[in-house]
Length: 189
Image 1 (tube, rainbow, N blue to C red):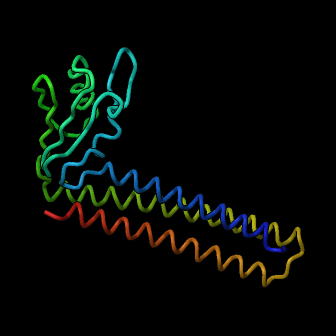
Image 2: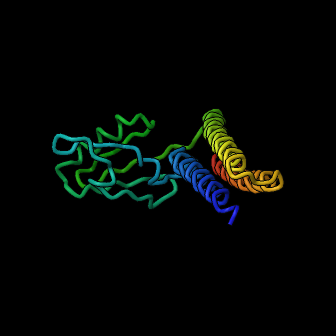
Image 3: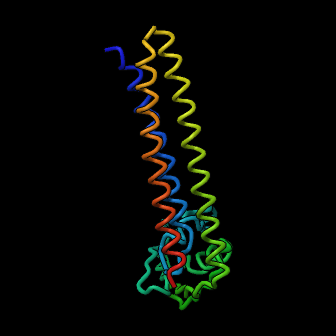
């Protein structure tokens, strides 16, 4: 079939764009939205037996209340290192250690801080859109090369470019939707 290599290019571009969107989702999860969320501590590392270890490997993290995160260490001896790791992560949080658990109260966000977080979210969305456009550009070049190499008609080229644009538009809409959701979460008082 003449459009197999083109379909492969389109599928690959779709996968790469989806990876960009997934990365954005994970980035947005770490941005605080006023409510306590275990995802806020995703990037925290703890010194555990001499090596930096992700927090989720040394403790369970939960958010039993909208304004509280509880960290339950698997090893009680690591509780001080976990507390240090949380403070070192510079998240603006003050962990309270009671000897068994670490409770982290989540203070309400000021209006100014909310606007900063919305701006950070917008930046992440824009980075993702740029990534999607770069993937589209690369895929478009690959399609043009295949069309020239295989002597396909220009109709095949235009059809493939339309399909590529549809894929791009779908992922861009997803990014916009995610940004809108995150903005609502952040601005919700």
